[in-house]
Length: 212
Image (cartoon, rainbow, N blue to C red; front, top):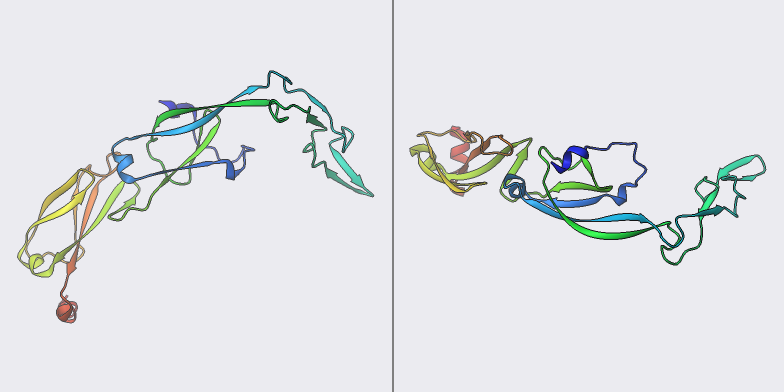
């Protein structure tokens, strides 16, 4: 499993937040265990300059500048006292990059807050808002509007699930907002819940609300 060696990283990393790549996925992608493609950069020491450094001229190699009694970290070398030598091959970065595409599985139990380190490439999986389904942990919630007459009489109702359209049977005198569970039909063994919402013609809304 490619993610066994990655893990979440909170703090400890000097990489800035804006260097994290957001990968947008859907609930269906997670349910189908779909692979996603990402581009990663492999860094190698520049063969021309060999990542050599030279003394920083601004701070004279001290790593800081001083004005009167105030000492500040040198902004030219970030306090290191050294800067890369001039190199047109790597633009004085000390390394070159080669990009490649890799295909990975979506990790189990993801959320939009966890950052993963994939070959030194930071990614965050962002779950897109769904038009029909709501996600709560590993459970899926779906609201289905049913005619109030059918709620009283009972019968078959067509619903949307992650496996496609299904039919469930509601009981007679079904109460508003009752839920029907499909066990194991959520994500990673979670459940699917269909919430029955009354579809009421406008002239009868007041009567319905009064009696319920």
